[in-house]
Image (cartoon, rainbow, N blue to C red; front, top):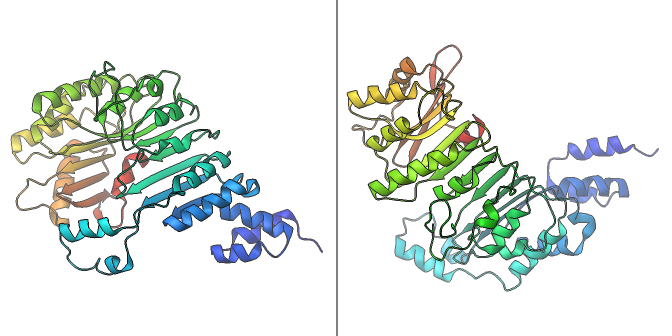
Length: 396
């Protein structure tokens, strides 16, 4: 008796390994169809040879490429085995540089294979391309000729005309992550973000990415250009300036542009190369009161928690202007001794909640250590050692 399509689907859905799915493709046409859908719907590709092989398959096999909806490509230089065997030792920077120099370059056909695969996956909705120790990141040309409409696009590409032109075509994009951005001279801030800036007008036009809701970008200029007139509710970015006066001007421009979002912000994560409590207080003062566009914030960071008691009281008073806050990220690297024991973290969390009772999660940052304190429904404050704190701004 022939099994129904639903039974085939149910069996495939309960297979836990990709090897077993591959075996199922040889059982029957029905199983082949269902197993290939499971195998190719979501692809995470690592390793140069593996990436090239899968991309060749997608580029030459329309039956399989039309099944792909999510694709992640992790591009990294591959070191010789002798170099990787020493990873557990305390190698110095010179040894690491030598190992990187010995790494095998990407094969000549690598990016051509990726480009062909991207042209073939016409139903793609989620695309991530990440680089590790790759110096030539100007590879956005591989996006030329693609027809898919993405909902999520994360990339480490260098900003250029190819990337700008691609973004101009993405009308369904909701979630965007950019590692690089270059502003056209004379645009909103008038200054190029990185050397040799290319025109950004095509990528920041009002008609571009009209559904954009989540934006993660290394440069604040990207947020200042991409947030206005779009329904962006979550932003993670970094300040680009180190000079105090220039940083204040950068802050003023950024906050003004963020308030031009079509929807109130729910999450704002601001990174900086050097955190300062006076700048944190300036940030909170500049964000205004309950009537501002920031009054709906659920997540806010990274803020320096002042050591001085008077400044800390002002800090708490400013936070009280955000009645919907659920999570804050606090920088405490200047505290001595480090308040990173469970007892100290619990005490600081309870102190914060005296003023801001809506906050139920607090991320504490001390140098490179991060700790999340969670307030349970019964009021107990516990340390969550397994939390992925880097993505909370997307979730709260």
